[in-house]
Image (cartoon, rainbow, N blue to C red; front, side, top):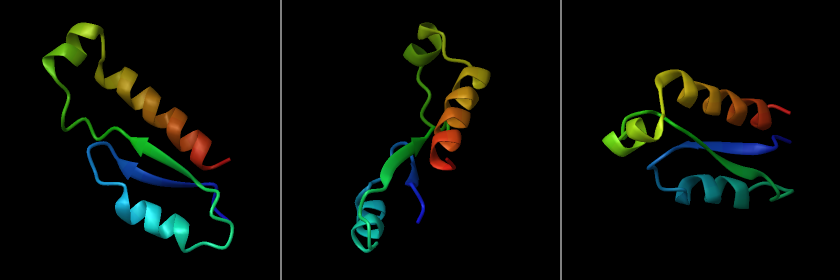
Length: 66
């Protein structure tokens, strides 16, 4: 009865979609966590910081655990 399945950004969603498809309700959200392994110069120039990315991850986790 979990509301979401989490994956890391850049990962294929196929396994997560299979997990969702194998549940009785099939209504889970697919949420993406940022692992910060692929932060680009453009992301930094746009203003992304370690703290801002972790705050985004916190929002994703909060949504997943509700």
